[in-house]
Length: 333
Length: 252
Image (cartoon, rainbow over all chains, first blue to last red; front, side):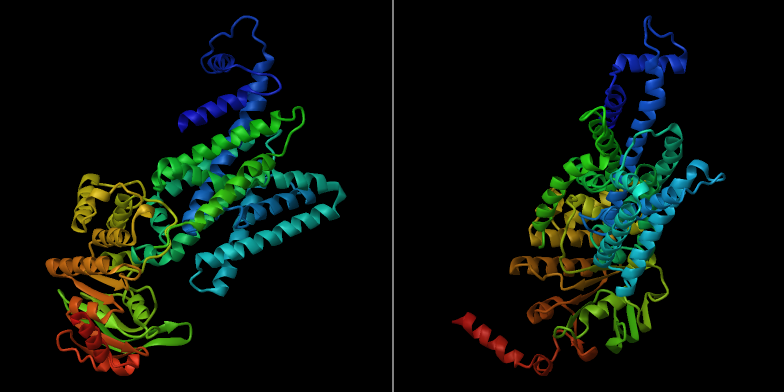
């Protein structure tokens, strides 16, 4: 999987309006890292194109894909629902709404700087989860998975309706809001990568600490509790962390669905269900998938771009239906 | 030994179990009988600490009501009715989860060899060692229950609570599973408290039988001395007559 991830990154940085071969990419890196002289007649425009435009974009796509795929993995296991995702639970919508409000209000913060969007996205993502869980706990004190998924869907639809209303009432921002709802990696700089990288890595390491708990939670709350897991605490922590991960990723690039749904399923098919494998592999798969999706988004109708959310949905929607029918045949012994 | 004194519990404001007291000693198998909705599962949930209850529940000196989930799970394992399984773990991976309560958690494990040997031993006890690499979603109902029993054994508890574990199993698997559980209890000198619907199974499987109705104990005795006529009022039929009639048909 690491090889696939590496290959996707090479393809991502190499293919575009101007193609940069792997040999040229290697030459640029050798030159920058070890001061190896560039070959004669080397077009130096490639250096800026690779290091300042393509590489941050591709790495950001990889990190966002990894973040969404891992958060989907955790969400599906915690809620014992193969169709659960951060997107479906309203985390993405919540974070998206936060980012749109920042955009529309023209808020900027000297103190937070580049951190403003992720902080707002994170807070709104977390807020959405808390609202969903709070409502679920009002229906059912034990916060059953079914109620959490149901309230999450309702909250998600409600927030989407707010965003649509904002888009239709604000001529000035309607185009930007619409594009934001479908996500984009264009014009992203290194600062985004540098902020997202430590957050994604910290969350993945955190989830690796909970791999056994996640395995057991897939058998349902009652059994997990009888096997020694403090259910409510585990749920709050794990769902809260997925909200942080998703909220931060979404706030940078907009709402991108389906990766969090399909990533975990593909990985489970090839590497089994144990989370000590599924989490790292989901990160690598999600990252690679997003890089390839972004590559398609910017090259299929070049010089214009297809929103990344459209590409992931075009692949994800048929997959969702496949999973839906397959889950209908799940084992009920 | 588990000691239950004046335990009452229920859901929201609806009391299900009303002031129940009994004791189960080591090496003893107690079977709880009773009609649907009498509180059998609720009582098991209270004993395992999954449902808040008033009164006292003590297990070898440990107060279940104040103990943490991990602490309880080291002593009490619960085997529920079969439910939907969505994720395809192998039999080995499933049984290994039973060791969670004795592990440090996450990927930071120690003594993997010893843990693996223990899991293999549990699989061997239920005759599933040769099936260890199969996916649990591919198993028959009987095989799946045996795998889940192996997971309970991997938890290495002092007491097992069984909530209708033989539901949806055919007769062969029902007998096989109950025999395995009984053998384990007697061999390892542990307690078993089980909810069963089949009176015949209860009489053959248990040392003691408790009859529960409307959240209260209606009869409690050794299985060999249990007064079967006490079932008549509760089930609304002459149970003895029904069983004799069935036996007569077998003789014909």
